[in-house]
Amino acid sequence: MNIQTLLSDKIQHAMILAGAENNPEPAVRQSGKPQFGDYQANGIMGVAKKLGLNPREFAQKVLERVELNGIAEKLEIAGPGFINIFLAKEWLADNVEKALSAVNFGIKTNNPQTVVLDYSSPNVAKEMHVGHLRSTIIGDAVARALEFMGNKVIRANHVGDWGTQFGMLIAYLEKMENEQASEMELSDLEAFYRAAKENYDSDEVFAEKARQYVVKLQSGDHYCLTMWKKLVDMTMSQNQLNYNRLNVTLSEQDVMGESLYNPMLPEIVADLKAKGLAVEDDGALVVYLDEFKNKDGEPMGVIVQKKDGGFLYTTTDIAAAKYRYETLQADRALVFTDTRQSQHLQQAWLITRKAGYVPDSFSLEHENFGMMLGKDGKPFKTRSGGTVKLADLLDEAVERASKLINEKSTALSEQEKAAVIEAVAIGSVKYADLSKNRTTDYVFDWNNMLSFEGNTAPYMQYAYTRIRSIFNKTDTDSTALANVHIVLTEDKERALAIKLLQFEEAVQIVTKDGTPHVLCAYLYELAGIFSSFYEHCPILNAPQEIKFSRLKLAQLTERILKQGLDLLGIKTVEKM
Ligand code: ARG
Image (cartoon, rainbow, N blue to C red; front, side, top):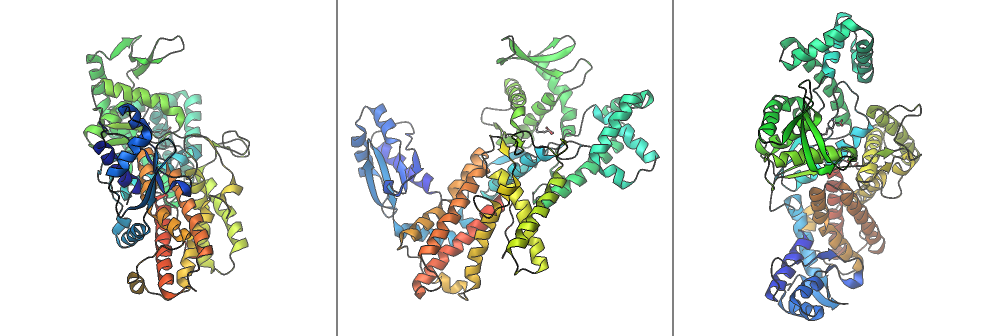
């Protein structure tokens, strides 16, 4: 149930009946203050102006024509021509009932799409670091939300699994195998990469072999491909451990690395050249874009093929965009990387469009995000200044969460406690990131995220267990509840009902804008509204009818909190 869309449609229809043309925009929004109603239509003034009418008079005409019988109990014109909408209690109660009995609360998009999500995207023979963390968890939350709304989601883990560095990596893997290196030595990817590079820089025989392997790999040599595959598998099986631990839905089947596009690149470059888009410049092939200026104010050149014949990151992204439209038949493709890759993607996509590989209707979106900073405001680093490995970060989270939970909960068995600690640890790291607007940098602060106060994972998880405990204290069964209709008498009950019905609006924004923080903010508000409802409206001691009605509100709150946290990839526990 999307109240905003419903009211919007109704008011728009009335605007047309009142003389407006061409999709008039009613601009229906949730009201900020109760005296302005539950929703308000802010679009009257703009449309009246176009029609040359007095806005309040136009508002009056719209009110006379709008059909909100049974939905709104009061409509009023305010200020220069706003329409304030007060929803009817019975209608709200009916819709809470419907949400309780429907699959997914009755939430479903009427326009399901195929959406590709390019997220996580680590690099082979490199450890996943905190920079990949943001991409992984933000992308995963958006993927879950899109799926929940009924869209087809294709997860495309754009792993960096191709390039000239593989010659050196293969040569080094061969050396390690000859020396019968242990699993241990191979599992430290960072050290592996460094050692390969050291050999390459210091040993001419090694370097020559590495260069030969690049050429052989590119021409499909069996041995080199086998070795390459080993490197990819080694990396991805370690990454999979991180994904599992992070409660992220990515699996090995979702890998669509750069190598997938490699065979398509010669044809694309030839085509760009034939279309006059790519021109030769000092042996390389370059696309000059008027839309981007270099520092001298001239059109910026984007290289699509190097002098030595090699292709670039941009060439691969052109192929990826084309493939996602043409082969995967997607309506949208979203790429989750940090803001620094923005220009790169805009250029690749502009070339894709200029070449006519995708129609205007195909949407290419960069879900960019800022950097993760330490408390000193500088990029997040280890104490000794190195990059923080994701696995180490999660270990630290568990250690810190243990302290927090051991101080708070004494009534849990050891086994329960371990599950709570893991949920709180991972949940805190994820929620801290997800709850911030992704476009800004954010400060990673253990104390803020591992707290039971404020908009944090522990607060939300605890709010959930508090509602669970109400149900643990009563033996009212669900059939008894189903037979009683919800009645909204108190303001707090009414406020809770509206908030519950706004879940869909929040999820929809996440799917449209790729902004999970909107869902976090919604859930946090819901938990707060429930708290104040629970404080003012006793449940278990109330007379039977009222008790059941309130229990149903609590039941829907519990389910929406759980579902909402699940969309964020945050686990809930039954008690803490
Ligand atoms: N592997 C890249 C990196 O670590 C991210 C890839 C993002 N996706 C893309 N289509 N360019 O920076």
